[in-house]
Amino acid sequence: MKIALVHDWLTGMRGGEKVLEVLCERFPDAELFTLLHVPGSVSPVIERRRIHTSFVQHLPLASRYYRHYLPFFPAAVERWDLEGFDLILSCSHCAVKSVAHPRKVRHLCYCLTPMRYAWDQFDAYFGADRLGAAGTAVMRPIMARLADWDRRTADRVDRYVAISHHVAGRIDRYYNREASVVYPPVDTAYFRPDETPPEGFALVVSALVPYKRIDVAIEACARARVPLRIVGDGPDRANLERTATGDTQFLGRVPDATIRELYRKAAVVLLPGEEDFGIVPLEAQACGRPVVALGKGGALETVVPGETGMLAEEPGPAAFADALSSALTHRFDPGAIRRHAERFGRERFGNEIEALATDTFQATESRW
Image (cartoon, rainbow, N blue to C red; front, side, top):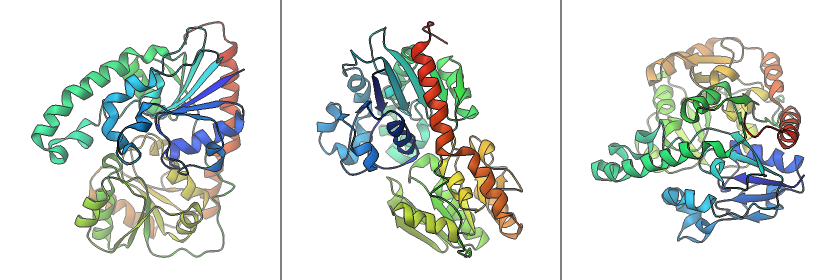
């Protein structure tokens, strides 16, 4: 079975790239297609792959400003020649679920989420408070056309697999397609407890982009008078640093070993935005640390209130500060937290995806 792995872009080791890493391990002979590759930005397992990029790779300053070329993504993903492959396995959160391919080539899409920008988070990325009224007016018809394209091309996928039941619901709502659920992989062998005593700070590990709601974490920690450490980078960093209150430190991008050390030292790890799933809460739980998360989206499937963390009932800083304060006074069992995280390990994910890939290739039906 000749497989093409398709991923939106390769610019860092976030949740989607950790999924891709396991796919590369399970399918070592597969070729990899991506809109853009920044060499050295992902793990050696991925870097060693034969990587095909798109014309986006050659656009001015694309490695830094690739999101600005979003309107070009449909044309880019439709230009790849996928003749000669038996199966396309896409890992998609933006455009690659819509790759064009010969009818005889089957397509299994592991969907991280339908395209956020074009559907339910337009204002977070392109609202007037970010682009001004004129910029929002320009982007609205562009994103409307992109959403229409995203919907029209949904049936290029033979089988959808979602990262959570929350995302499966979005696939049904936007694409009118059913999706099975396979939870993403968590490296529970690497992220594990040690004898490090927890310190008194809260931790955020996240891309600094609008929907992550890092501003909520900052204000909540200021209200609760809890020091906050933020790992990650992104387009919102400058604004967050400028407006941050309380004892807040921005650590930027750091190696996995440092992230693991911070998980172990943190009193609590925060997830202030509505996530489609959320790898970070499970990495933290694998290290035996409790999580405070917004009680919506994927957190409902990864955080057990009172056992592995606390859920904030409302999205604002006040409710999040209350949940944070409750977590800091609650007695959690690190062993129980760790055992919960072990259910989401890498081997489990690899086995389930490999079985689905084989089933998709062998199926006689062209749609599910």
